[in-house]
Image (cartoon, rainbow, N blue to C red; front, top):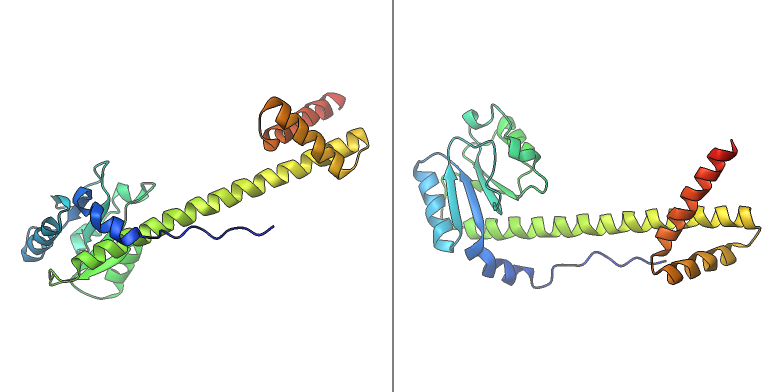
Length: 209
């Protein structure tokens, strides 16, 4: 059976631009010229900004985006919020390009990069692209979850049909129709009926042993 492709967030960019004024942004950056330029541009865009340095162990609950300055003093320990699920998109702010910096950017699972010295140009684009990629990633995760649930349901249904076929000496179609009729009569899903059949068979098999 053909499976529909994951939905694309049509019209997502205009929606993201409209929602920037309610976007809660956390900036982990020293209070220097780059940090001030970054904060100023984000506020001009309309974002709600909270700034910290050094990086905090936890993020405010309403955080929708993180700007993170990749600095030696910030790389000593991995912040606890990096294990948060779901993790808001992270944009790395880098002032030097070397293997250690690149490794740090990868550890942050950064959705974008802003180079130092920070300029006003590019921050809006980096913000929207990071948010868009995060939206698409969540859509993919939901799509995969639905597929996994569907496959699990099909496997359960197949097992329940096998139980009925062996226990009642009926064909596959008859077994399916029996499960379906019970689901309709009890107003539950075929997967729930299949689960009940499998559990009952397991109990009876155990008692038989």
